[in-house]
Amino acid sequence: MITLALSKGRIFDETLPLLKAAGIEVLDDPETTRKLMLATNRPDVRVVLVRASDVPTYVEYGGADLGVVGKDTLIEHGGQGLYQPLDLNIAKCRVSVAVRDDFDYATAVRSGSRLRVATKYTAIARTFFAEKGVHVDMVKLYGSMELAPLTGLADAIVDMVSTGNTLKANHLVEVERIMDISARLVVNQAALKLKGAVLRPMLEAFAGAVRKD
Ligand code: AMP
Image (tube, rainbow, N blue to C red; front, side, top):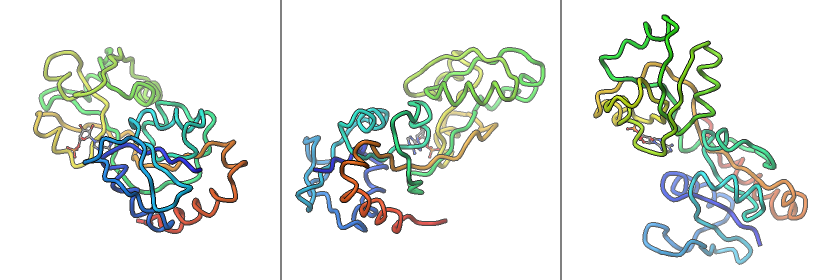
């Protein structure tokens, strides 16, 4: 049995065409079923629905043989124990620094003052500001980062941006683009050895179906 870990929403939706290219069709719709383990048209392949941030953990410990996860989540988790063979070029967005539209970010950074940064992406933010030589006080949040500058909790946020509409709606502006994000296929290293005969053709089919743009 091959177990594939996916998270609901954009990753699930955008992975379906890649699965189809590998001859795999999921038999349930995650938006309507309450099941967390979904059968496919292949009796030897199943999908488990987990939180995006749990995908690397499932694959690392062998609860799933492979999974699809955003580069951001992978960096925050650390890639230990995971074979990362493919950039799937889906679920694309970026991680950026944003501030209130009336906040003078350039001066704050230049003057060497400490910047209070709220984010869920503490590893990415820490590395980014350390490389710039900016001192930061990090405030860890788990969601609704956009609220932090509006309530005075932080000067800046490090958050995922796709269209930029959420920032705009909250009077925030994107002042730095830290990195581009896309979803990656990760594979359990032991599974790749033990189930290579089934997994390798699947990986090749995914690779052949990845859109290059
Ligand atoms: P947007 O308004 O299109 O810029 O989307 C930004 C909002 O969607 C933020 O709250 C992000 O946290 C979230 N978001 C955007 N892209 C992704 C993604 N690929 N994965 C998870 N969250 C995302």
